[in-house]
Image 1 (tube, rainbow, N blue to C red):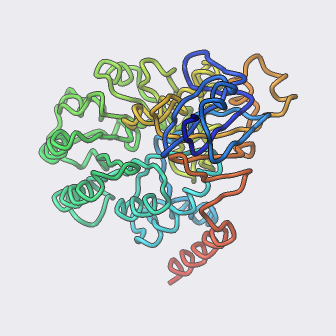
Image 2 (image 1 turned 180 degrees about the horizontal axis):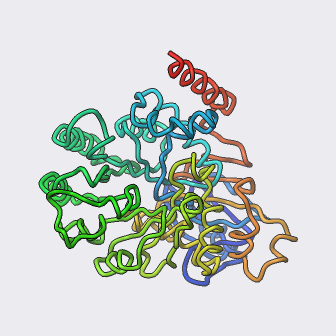
Length: 422
């Protein structure tokens, strides 16, 4: 008697994200939101009685893409350019809950359409971002900001809010939380020590955008004079460990990259945003500690991990295989989710993406990975599943009203400009 399954997918190619492995003639079975098995298609057809059987004869099936650093709500400001270029930081700092709510919904829809099934988000209202992601059944790591710009409250109130949110989402399978110190030059060692103690007690990740402040301006009364960069200061305070991630837009000094590697910490690069800041060096995924993010949509232009992977490969000279690793398993590892997502393995969550590849595109490249990274675009994402649930089917977004979402940015543009005029 055949085993029950919710879904059986037969693509032309299957990329489990094992080094150098591209499978043809294989299939993948999904049940209860997880991958049940992958193997030769004939064997899986004989083994499983699937409620739905999809054949994707011109497609590659791979793990859902992971955006390891984003500012989702700021997507609302793209329609307000050039106003946003001048006022974006101020808007972000004073954004209300409704701004974060609408912007995060729009960003989730755009990310799913681009094959992104998990993202890490930094917003001034993490409680709103978490609620939107939970309602949309989107996998997300939500930053708990501490410091200047996080809110009008001080660090004590911010930590109290963080602990409340931690209690609210500790059992949620899709929502994880992490601490994000902001305005580091204005946070004393005493405050940072409290953040580290709370993070240690909760076994929580910590992520820091390292280049928000120039090293030349790095002066803190309580900081050790020998700590020339933010990362060196955090290392002295005991922050650097496998659960820590540094986010770089501008190039990170080699000494800091070596410091991260020595402590087993992660490095999240935002290549397209980095082009405007002199070109971020993107190290290859050594030890699984490197990942990709999009940063603000005002700098990167879109939530597009395929474009980030391509830019990373072109900037740093490594191959398409390494770039895909950064966009999948590397991102999962940086968010502490490598046991759940990032590769196609039995038992992992079924976060999946199908990319359509025409014969001429594939024929023009030395490998399938090259065809995906250097030849494919987000428009070729045909199907997306989040936890085994269809989010995009035949290029159609399932859970969102595209017409309703399209009306949101112009409405916010008018509202922001009216507020500025007043």
